[in-house]
Amino acid sequence: MIKNITIFSDATIRQSMKALKKTAEKCLIVVNKNNTLLGTLSDGDLRNAILKGAVISDSITSIFQKNPIALVEGNYKLEQVKNIFIENKFTMIPLVDSEDKVIDVLVWDKVFNNRKKKQRQQLDASVVIMAGGKGSRLEPFTKILPKPLVPIREKPIIEHIIEKFTALGCNDFYLTVNYKSRILKAFFEELQPAYSVSFIEETEPLGTAGSLKFLYDKINKPFIVTNCDTIIKTDYFDLYEFHNNNNYDITLVASMKNYIIPYGTCELNDEGDLQYINEKPEYDFLVNTGLYVLNPDVLNLIQENQLCHITRLIEDAQNQGKKVGVFPIDDDSWIDIGQWAEYKKAVERL
Image (cartoon, rainbow, N blue to C red; front, side, top):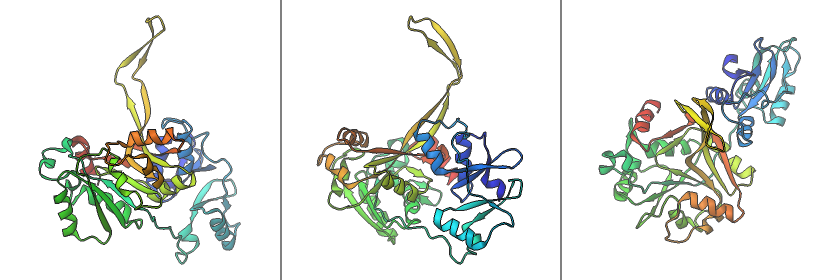
């Protein structure tokens, strides 16, 4: 277990994000080559670093917490440990020997002997799935089926998306529909799910945000909007808390992407002469995934029955002085099924 949650201090942000995905905890223990405790690194530490301009190739050296709470083997009492967990809302505490070498980790379930399992609040939020597009990039499937019903293994895309939310307690879903809407409605009528599904009819395409106007006065708290061809593997409760705790009006989920130009790029000076050749440069970007959290009052910015894309809505919100946040995730947490190359990868990953 220890190897799964420890990481060296010279690791990169990218390596740390991938390591966090492999463990059920939300924190890593930072050690040196001798396994000496140096600190801890949480998903929040990584997120804050990215939002301050760090890129995924950066080292975590200046990011992790240097003064962690740790316990020395044989030198603590169970009640003391329980109090530390409860007061600090920790998920784990490193256990070290007399020389500060990490020998074990105390986790909530072990400390409370599974009798007082840490309860996770359910996500009480409505979810809007934009399901009205033609999905032309997935033809010929979408010549017959609406894009949300394109199958991935034994289930259509939209069921994979919805299950990510119902697992956290979401039960209120709105689907914006237009193209082949009757087929999509018939599917849910036949499915008879335990959750609630309401359909928002677009008589004509209104863009990636225009149909949200139909939700005006129907939703009174922050809600989630997602594309119907995007599966995000992240903690949606953390996303929702991030949005609320930072008082954002709109939060968009962005994936860290790293691109390598396979050529030497020519950098010129002001006179147009060659300054230097940058051999196979790397670039890091935060890419919009199509998953958002919106406050209900943002809907006031959308004109009724007018074409409006989400990018325009975000721009209008910023012009009105509203606060727009970014929730970063690693590139492996984003599955885009909107085109064939990605669809084939999704079949392998899900």
